[in-house]
Each structure stands twice: as C-alpha cells, then as structure tokens.
Figure 1: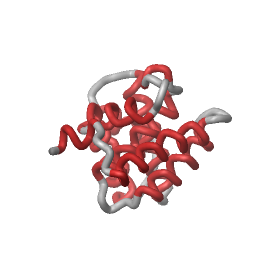
Figure 2 (figure 1 turned 90 degrees about the horizontal axis):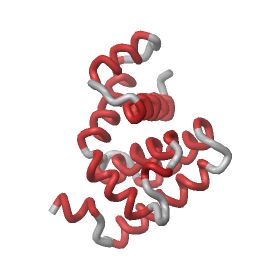
Figure 3 (figure 1 turned 180 degrees about the vertical axis):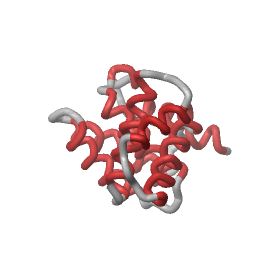
Length: 146
C-alpha cells in the first residue's frame, strides 16, 4: 500500500470498524497497523483522515443528513456511510484536497468496497454536498464554523 487511494480505503476500513464496534481509537489503530506494512507517510495520512472525521463527526454527519435527501445515516449501508463521511470531511476541512478528487476517490472506493449501487449513491450525495458548498448554501457546516 502506498497510494492515497489505498490510504483512503484503509481510513474507510478503520471508520467502518469504529462505526460498528465503538471504542478507543489508539488500540484500533495499533491492531490495524499490526497486520499491514505501510510507509510512515501513508500511515500519517490515514491517521490524519480518521482523526479528522472523528473530531468533526457531528459537523460531517449534519451535512450528510442535509444532503442525503430521504436517507438517514442509519439507513445507509455502513461502507457507503463511511465513504461519504470521509469525502465530506475532506471537502469541508481539507483545503489541500480539491473537491473533485475527494468525490472521484469516494466513488471509486464505494464501487470497490460497497454494493452494486454504492458508486451511484455516493456520487449523488457528494455531488449535492459539492453544489451546496460551491453555491454557498447554508449548511450545518457553515452554521457551526461561523
């Protein structure tokens, strides 16, 4: 593993695990890394993403709930939910990652890790998030960050 795509897939795996088995992050990370050999750079990126999603989860989930019309977070498939959370975190909080990259990566990961319709579902939600952000539409994010 070494690419940012692989790193994002690892981040989704960790977020998925924590979503279904809540617990302390550090032991989860230790266990996860014990089974994988990655560069320090990749590990740092994965952990930044995971910690970022977790630290901003209420903000991220608020935006997802708003933009995933007729879909509650609990109703979404676990993989889709965590792929979307990761991409929304990147779109809201990571100015070093263009929105288009976050969306493209999320769609690819959803197709690879999710169900048959995961790519389309993730694309639909993230496109709505992108449009709202670009239009300056008030979201949970803007109300909490202002």
